[in-house]
Image (cartoon, rainbow, N blue to C red; front, side, top):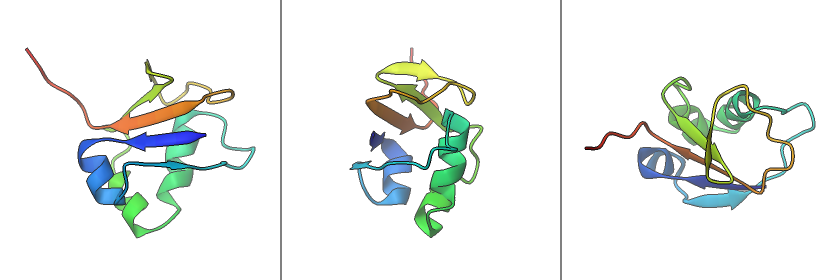
Length: 83
């Protein structure tokens, strides 16, 4: 699946996107975040506070318990503000 990183998540990881195949036990967005955080220091830094990192599956906002099966793209980004 394609993973896309935005803003400071991208800066901390050091790349804008990548294609990865998580192991079968990674079933939800939360599982994916935990798995990514274990991939090295940069990922651990990017996901050190998983409660504030937002995710979108195929451009639809997703919560930590959202299944990732069949996802084409998962994006991670910091909270947004606007007006």
